[in-house]
Length: 137
Image (cartoon, rainbow, N blue to C red; front, side, top):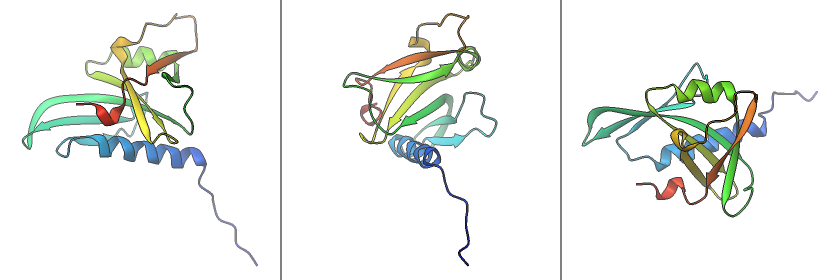
């Protein structure tokens, strides 16, 4: 008799890859932790300098896809409610899109995203590929 077991959805694998890529791109002494109650914030990053806490932190909304959409831009769909929640945060918020086929992530600061119409449920955020995470300093 063959036993059947649960399978892991591809989306979960992609999420794990994106988190691993993000964490490997951070300076060694910065601390990234997953936010347990996710209302648009996937990760919180605490910034350390010379192993000393700075009190500085930023928040990350992390999306991922298997393939790139084009040579210049990546895009993510964001719920309006998520945007409204994030835009009111006191911390800096970064939107990040990981693309598996490129093994790269691209970022944009939420403050640089044009405010959407409040009548929409979702909207598209375009992230320039000129902002690769692997080259951020």
